[in-house]
Image (tube, rainbow, N blue to C red; front, top):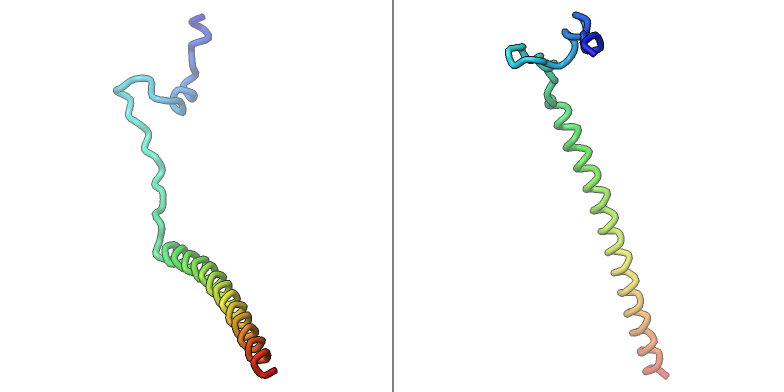
Length: 84
């Protein structure tokens, strides 16, 4: 059983820390988000918001036009009845 617990020297150097006195491995530095990444994220968000807003405005205009045309047709029908 002891033989199976032996680890080669290369495996120990790449394995986890076994003792508290071992120095922890420093993580690789990760690059932060640059100014161009932030600007592009903002522009994508603004574009998606603009498309959504355009859809709702178009829907509101279409419904409003249908309502106005229906009221005008109703008034024309009433006027035609009065002229008879």
